[in-house]
Amino acid sequence: MESIEIELLEWVNKESKKMGSLSFNTIEPLRLEASKRRYYRLKNNNVSLIVNTLDPSEDDNLRFIEIGSFLIKNGVSVPEVISFNEEKNFLLQEDFGDDVYQFILKDSNYDQLFTAAIDEILLIQNSDHQGANFPVFNKQRAFKEMDLFGSWFFKDLLGLTEDPKLLKLFSDTYNKIWINLEKQPKTLCHFDFETRNLMMLKDSAGVIDFQDTLIGPVALDLVSLLKDLYFPLSSEQTRKFIALYLKQAIDLGILDRVELEEFIIWFEWTGVQRQLRIMGTLSRLYLRDGNASRLLDLEIILEYLITSCETLNEMDSFLELLLESKPKLLTFLEHFK
Image (tube, rainbow, N blue to C red; front, side):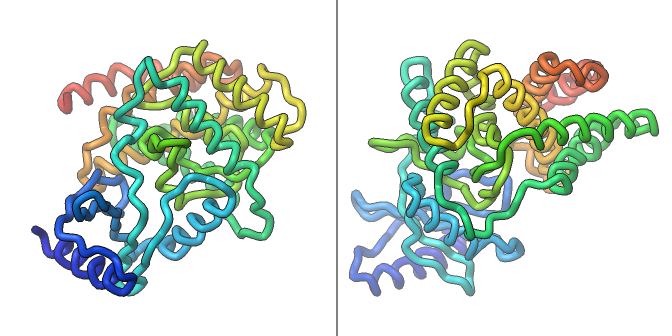
């Protein structure tokens, strides 16, 4: 047992004793995150809890707890925080189990699970967030995220040159994306509402890793869900779930009347921005941090990006660049398969 695991176990048992609860005798590490956040499961017979170590260098520790409390009050299924050690950045929370969407989605259950997930998106969007002081997804943030694509993926990972003509193409493309994102209504967003962060519960979809919640484009969480890296949907399936979401969003007053085709255009533009961010982020995770655990995800993300650009009339030049870059990426990824 590592020293951090011993320390966590001692702290949890001390907290548990204060509450008159059971003591825990086993601890096991869970999935490795792209951040420095680490998760562990503590067990005692049929009782289990989750403890995680929050990154002290990030200013989101107390905010994580505040957001969780806010979401619970608004009916969103997130784990309840039981205890927090601010000095050590240890957090003890409810255990949602092992049924992560990423690993359990299949043809026989995807309809039910995606429908439950859409219900949680609607709860998040319909929450009363006035005065809650959530950050806003603004132009500066959007461009900073998209710049990761040019610097970390295109230049550093693929080794391609950013000449003045190419830099202008990037700049023009980012401006087009932002102009189209601004056309959307803004709402509360989880920001990473993907199957890695969703759990199958008895009566709902459990939502985790919500620390980046913000005010952003209304299509953002739906794009995160439906353009999934681990259970890709057909265009017909995607359209069906978009229509399901849209009807309920209009009925709840989250959106005014908007045509399906118009919303799909919002959806695709939002997907392009998100895919650029993720490609840059995962490239940086490998190049800077030495973590190749999600490097192979780049292939499907690039496919999503190409497909989105094919549906958007203003993206022909950028689409050509993506198609030219694809063989180089596939060759690079062969070393990791």
